Image (cartoon, rainbow, N blue to C red; front, side, top):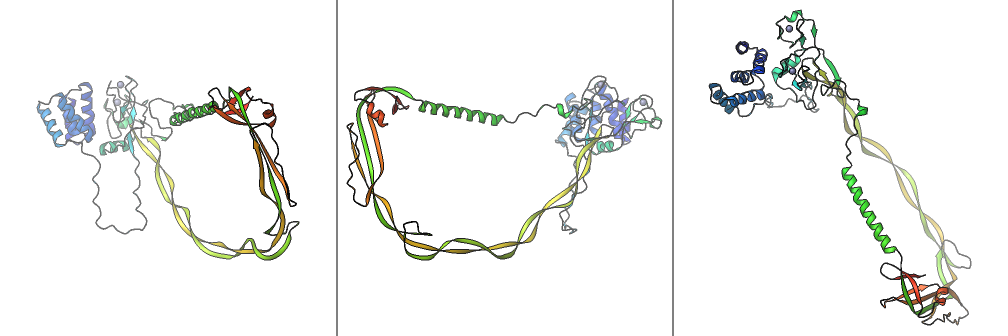
Length: 461
Ligand SMILES: [Zn+2]
Ligand SMILES: [Zn+2]
């Protein structure tokens, strides 16, 4: 009976009503092949059409309806896109304005919401469905629509028309929701004129759009912290820590003092005295030091002054932020009270960075030399002319004997005391020690020696 009514509605061009009647049949008889075929032939939604044909074939491809569906699927293998054909490019673009073409006013996108059935618990029922497909209960005043994050924009013309037709009205007798265009209650047939209630439109900001049927939105303050993104960084830190530990350990191992017993097998010493001689030298400087005897003087460049000689006018390009207009952007969602949501568009200023050329004064400097008197003078200075050196492998250290001339004197002295050590493997080392220690050691004496990691002596304990 309903299928016959659907056919009549379809021939009258009442597509919406026809689909509603077919759906009513399919709720109770999900394998009604004729109903699926009629749905495929009626729906304006290409995806749904393909799905309906596939359903017909799945039920039985051998019947007349099945063969018809197979043929239909072969003619249109892919669902034809409902996007409007791109308008033919104008052959000659009218030179209306030099500015870049203004995009047409952005139409707010419509998306299909969802609702949950509070009778049977079905979730995510399409906004276009007025009755729950699982239990058949119609939605009423209490229905809460929500908009899943991933809801696609509705592009189908029939659905858009329905979304923009207005809020659902509520039957005064049975409370059923009815689409704005329906004149009679789909459930009891009561007239729309008798109804004085309807679903409400509601506007949300992007942050509080209901995304599921859960009534109160969780407060953002209680939201769990965002997942830590430091995974990669953390492992890097761990590797760095392990490397650091390795090198600290290696360093400690190398520097850690070791003790070993060695025998004193010999001595060495060396002492030096530098011999200085008073010599007359010629020097040049900005002043004559005490004891210097002036020979000549001249004017020389002591340094430079940067002197401001004037300004030069130059131009440079400066970036500038200029407001060039406004643009629409989605700032919220409006629950249309009929299962659909529409974007709320807000205005915001559009800025452009342009370069502006400006003139400025560049200071011009000139380097001006500073002249001063430079003196050439002779002066007597002590200079190291030679070093007297004595040494030996005995333990009688002595200073070199000096035979100084009248213009000579003894300068800096150095002294070095070395013991020769032999370890258990008969390897020999020389170690410099203090004079007191050097004198206290006896040849053949066994001593405790601190060594580095390679056995080289560092000190005698
Ligand atoms: Zn239900
Ligand atoms: Zn009713």
